[in-house]
Image (cartoon, rainbow, N blue to C red; front, side):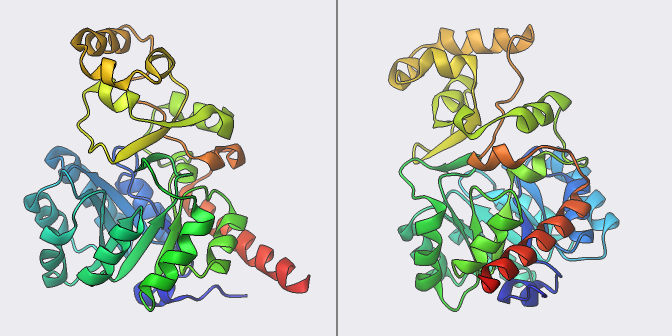
Length: 320
C-alpha cells in the first residue's frame, strides 16, 4: 500500500507526514532528517529570532535534497524574519496563532506554499478565504500552544476537511504513532502534522532531561494552562494556552492566573528557581499521545516507521 494523498502530491514527498515547526526544538537537523525520511520537515522559526534562523536555516538547506519548510508564530514574527527564511528556498511556510494575512502575499511571491494552522472554525474560514495551500487543523490534545476553548482532533478535523475542500488538510494533536496517522487519513485529512513524537528523537534540539521526561511521561501528566506563560513573562495572546507536563509553578498558581499576572514577585521567584536549577529553563511541551513515546530514534527512521504502521493499520481495518 502506498499512502498517496493530495499532500504528498503537492510536495512530492513519499509519506503524508509533516514535522510540526516547534520553536526551539525543531532545528535544521531535525527538519532535514524528517525530509530525508520522506516527510516534510518544518523548521521552527517561532517569533523570528534572527540568531536562531541564521544558525538553523543553512543546516536544513544544506542537509537535504527533499522539500522542507519553516513555521512562524503569526502573532509575533515580522516580515523581515519571513523574508530571511525565504532566501533559503523553503517549499512551504507555515503560519500559526494569529492573523496570517500580512505574510500571505510575501510567501506567494517567493513561490512557497502557504500553510496555515487553525484552532477553530473562524480561523479555518479565514485560511480558506486567504487562499491557503494547506490547512492544519489542530486539536486540543496537542502539546505546546493551542486554543483555550478548542475542540478535540477527532471531531474537529472532519469539519475542517468539509469546510476547506478541496484544500488539503493535515490533522494535528494527539498523533504519535502510525495508528494516529491512519486515523487522520480516515477522517479525511491528507496527512498528519506531528510534534511531541519528534521532540523525542536524536536530532531534536532539546536537553536530555526533556527527552527523558517525554519518554517517561503519561497523558494524565499533561495539562493545558496559561500559568507557565504568565510566570515566564511570555506574552502569548489570551486565546491560546499551552499543554505541558506537570510543573511546580503550575501546581502553585493553578486557578489563580489573575493573581499571578498582578504579582511581579512570582515571576522573580520563577527566574530564581530556574537559576538555581530547581525547575527546567523551559516547560516540557507535550501532547496527550505522550504515552506512546518510549524511545529516541532517528527522525528519518521514525518517519518510515510511522508510515509503515499507518499502512498496516489501514490494511487491518480493511480486512475487518
